[in-house]
Image 1 (cartoon, rainbow, N blue to C red):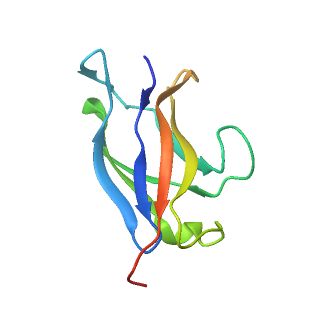
Image 2: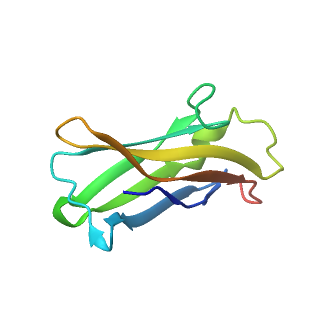
Image 3: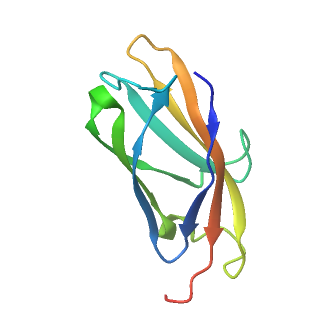
Length: 115
């Protein structure tokens, strides 16, 4: 499984909430017995975890889930009137303990006009 790169825009005054489906080689990844984690940091592999995502896995056999990243969780991140780039990845842990990172990229934390 190769890691795909996908940047995600998260508004400071809202949330990112989308349905996802993980694939490998064109086939859905079976998430039965697996766990998913997503952590956001200032840079990859360094510093404190700023936020993490919530997963609602609704079709494990076909790798389908809803992903929620809450913008208000980034209140401590400086630059409220700027676009701030942060790092994230999704770690998939299989029942046998093998860990894979199918997706990684940047969180584009954007300012909002409505507060």
